[in-house]
Image 1 (cartoon, rainbow, N blue to C red):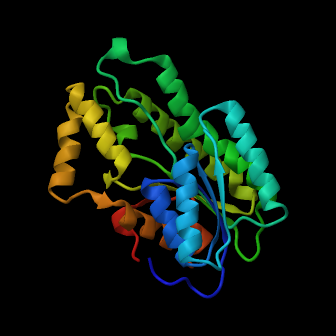
Image 2: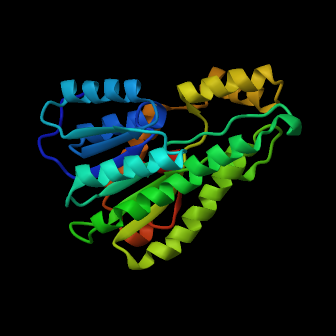
Length: 264
C-alpha cells in the first residue's frame, strides 16, 4: 500500500468491503483520504480488513459494520448501526459492491430461496441503503455519488445463471428508477459494469459451475487464463476515480460505466 494522502476528502459507504472489488475500492479510497464505513456479511474478514487499513493509514477514520444485507432483520440492524455511527456526518459516496447468486445445474435445482436471497442483496439492499442515507446527502460540497456494481450477465441469458442474472437485471431496473426518483435529491447515481473480474468469488463460482457442467464456466476460466479478466485492484481504482472525478452531474449521473472507459 502507498502512504496515505494528507487530507480527508469525503465519507464513503461501501458494501461487500471484505473482499474482491469492495476491498480493492476501500484501499483506494483510504489512500485518497476518505472516511470509510465498510459493510460485509462475514465479520472476521471484515475486521481483518479494518485492521489492515488502520495499520497502513493510522490517521484514517474507518468503521466496520458486519451483517448479512440479504437478511431483512440483519439488514435493519446494520442500517440502524450505520446511522448511529454516522450521526450528522454528510455522506459523499455510496458504492454497492456486494452481490450474490448461486448457479443451478438445472431448473429442478434452481431453488426459489436462492433467487430470493439474490434479489434481497442485489436489488433490495441498495435501495434500503439509499433510503437510510437520504438524510445524510447534502448538495455541498457536492452531491452524494451512488454507484451500483452490476454485471453483464443481466442481459445475457445462459443456463444455470438465473438467480444472479435475474437479480442483476432487477438492479439495472432499480438504477433506472432511482435515476428518476433521485432527480430532486442531492444525489447522483451511476451503474458500473466492470466486466469479468478476477476475484475469489468468481473463482468459487467457476469451480461450482464447472462441477455442474455449466457452459459459461469454460468461458470465465478462459478469461482468467488469457489475462483478459480485470483485476479487482484495477476495477477498484477505476471506481475510486469515478467517485472523485470532477465531472459534472450530467456527465456522471444516470450513466452506465465500463472499466475500460474510466481513465485513472
